Length: 457
Ligand code: BES
Ligand code: MN
Ligand code: MN
Image (cartoon, rainbow, N blue to C red; front, side, top):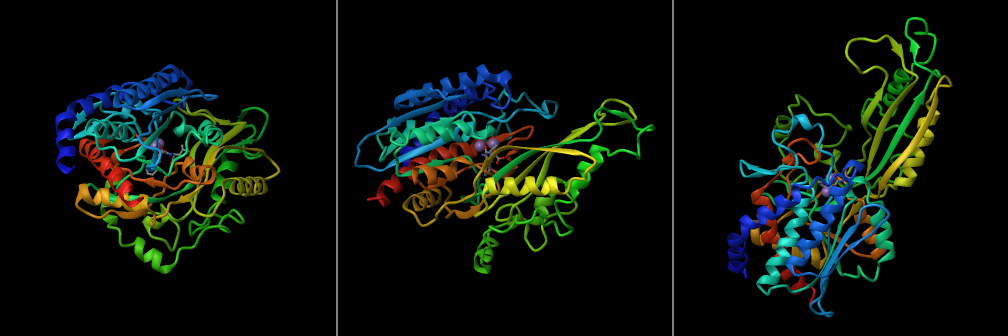
C-alpha cells in the first residue's frame, strides 16, 4: 500500500495542484453578496470534482442561502462509513493591497501555494477529494465515504445546521472526518482534540441625536465613542480576567496533570514573539500562552468605528459609536447563556446619558473530541505512518461550530485531522498552504481509512 500511495501521488501531483488552482481561482467569498455567482460556481466545481473522483449520488443541495455539496461511495453496507466535512467558501480577501500576488490568482512561491482559501479550507478539503480518487483508482477504499461540503462556514453555518437536522438518515455514518485545522509544525504532527465556541455581538451606542460641533457641545454631552471605550475597558480587569458576572461559572477547570500534559507540546515563546513582531506577550494572569489560546475563554473587540475617519481633522462629536465584540468559549460554556450575560452586563454599565443596542450575531458551542476512539487511533496511526512520528493531541483556539452539532444532532464524534500551520495566514493577506502539507494530507488520508477499517472490526 505504501508504495502504491507514494507512486500515485508522485505521478499525479502536478494535476493535483492544477485542479486545486482551478478551485482557488473562483472567489467564493460567502460574506459578500457581490460574490454570489462565484460561490455558486464553486459548489458546481466541487460537485464535478467528486463525480470525477468516483462518487455516486453527487448533488448540490439547495438551502436558504448557499448550497451544500453531497456525494457518497457506498461499497458495502456492513463496512464503517466516514462522513467527510469541509467548506468551499472563503473569507474576504481584504486588505487587498497587502497581498503580494492576487488572492484569487494562485501561485507557488517557496514551496507554498498562495491564495485565499489555499489552506482554509479549499486546499484541505480538496485533499480528501484527491485521496478518495487515489483509493478508487488503486482499489484500496476500505470504508464507505460520504462527503458534505458546505459554502457558509465562514459566516456561521446557519443553513448547514438545518440541513443536518433534516437529513439525519442521509448523513448516517460512524464518524466525521475534517481537515480544517492545523499541526504544530511539519516535523511535529498533532491532532486537534478541542475547538472553542463563539458568541459574537455587535453594539451600538447613541449619544446626541445628531453629530455635534465639538466646541459648542464638547464637555457637556456624552460622547458615544468615549463612552464605548470606557464600557469596553470595564469588561476586563487588570489581570485580564473578563468581568461579566457569571462569565466563568461553567468554565471547565483542567487538572494539574492535564495542564502538565499540555505543556509538553513543543513551543517557543521567543519564536512566537518573533513571528508576530511582539516585544512582549499579553493575556490572562496565571495561564501560559498555549492555555490562553485554547482552554481559556476570551473577549476581543474585532472592530470599532464611529465619528470622523477621513483626511485631516474634523472637530465633531459623533451621534453614534459601534463595535463588534466576540467571545471565544470553552467547555462547558454555552453561547446563548454567554450572549445573555454579556447583554445584561453591557446594558448595566451604560450611563444614562447614552442609549445602547446589543445585537447578537452567530454563535457556536465549544467541543472536546475523544482520543480513545477507533477513529482517533486510526488518525494517529495514519500520521505516524506518513510523518514518522506519533501526533500530539492539542486543543485549538479556533472554532468550527458545526462540530458540536454533529455530536448533539447525529451522535457522531469528529476527528480533526488538519494539516495547516498557524503561520499559513488564514483569514489574513497572503494566505498560503505548503505543497508539502497538501501532498502529505493526500498521502495520510488513505492510511486513516485503512486503519479505521481495521480498528473497527
Ligand atoms: N478553519 C477555521 C477554524 C480553525 C482554524 C480551527 C485553525 C482551528 C485551527 C474556520 O474556517 C474558521 O475560521 N472558523 C471561524 C468561526 C466561524 C463561525 C466564522 C473562526 O474560528 O473564527
Ligand atoms: Mn475553515
Ligand atoms: Mn476560516
